[in-house]
Image (cartoon, rainbow, N blue to C red; front, side, top):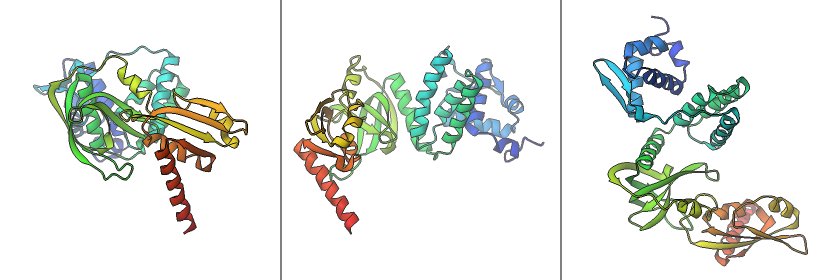
Length: 334
């Protein structure tokens, strides 16, 4: 039958995530359940594709579906209560999601689905903007293992369940990459605008303290039946205020910089860190200081200013930046 073939033009032109979202809408609209053949007719797809989509909801998206006597449904616990947003509130949510799209380097089906739902409550111009954002998102690389790990960690975070992860740490300050197994209490999943990545922040039982894990470096996730008590309200947020971007589990370090007069005004007009203090110098330069968690992240920001900034403190960071610039100079001279 035309339009119902799995490889036909009608099906292939549909965005798979949007189609899955419509399958979910049908399931939620029929709490008593709906047959796969009825889903196929409603969406203009084959019965085989309908079954495949139903399987994907449970396997890939981890939505709690049920099947009984040929009918399929979805448990009410799969969704949060609906939000009633004003146009301004919806726009605020959209701008936050839009920022994620700009920095996303992977295709996120959950973000795409959220955009689909959000667009239904917006005016035509905003709805068209959402559609264009979806077009941009859909061109990002697919990373099914990463998405699966995010889903599992999100469920563990929501249910306050301890996870076991296999993690491959990055190379920092000359240290070789480290692979290890960690048992973690997932306190928070936080995006980074600096690295365009997602991070798991939680208590590491083995290291007996707060640790930050880049989710892209997690090789396997197991959600255990064990539960944990959440940290004291506001404590994680207070720790994150020390971070330059996302890493909050390093020792507090005072960083002092001198910016040349040419960029002093540009530096002074922005709050780069909550703890920063600035002081104008007689020669027009700017003295800048802040207390941050370690120097791994702030180092990249310092290097982005090239020769327009000088590290005064700490001595180790000054040496590191100077050595980096010398290596760069040598590479260009070569």
